[in-house]
Length: 243
Image (cartoon, rainbow, N blue to C red):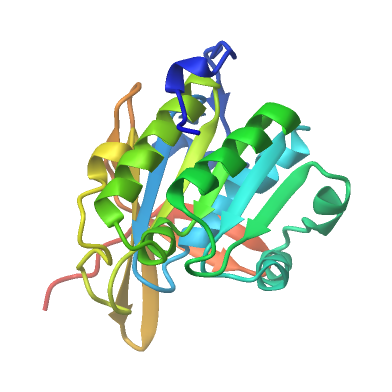
């Protein structure tokens, strides 16, 4: 069955969804809005999945349900990576508050995936949906343009249901700038979070920028992102002096 976006019966109440990191929330004008879609774009190692885990953890601690759909990472790997950053999510999964599905390439169709997500939202009252990664989702399907149209209908449905949807979009290469898919997906995002990485004096520096936000104000400053075993932090980015 095709997804009908207007069939979502839930009414979206104005609210800001927090990440649990105050300086990150400040970049979004206080938080992200329910019923919107965020594209998290970056190269390998920039912290894309960590950003998604951050919002998922914050939602779970608020008592909300979260749906996590993996196309490039095993469930056990996800748990271990999250635990390494101080985010213990296994118990939430065992309690049924965190819904996790991982998919192998070519094992489902775009329509089937949309139905799985829709059923999770309807039956479990999910407030945050993470698709990690959207690049892996497209690469597992033979007709990418149709897949984009199908997921666009899904995103409209989730928006009407008041769900914050986070799409992870990978870029080619460790330090490359090309997006890792050959179709334009920028129109899918109400918000675009760009993560980058650069080398300086033998150390890689991660940066984070809110490129786009349709609903409300946002910070255009480039900030530095730190991902450590003690947690995630965002601070003012101090540019290096030119030589």
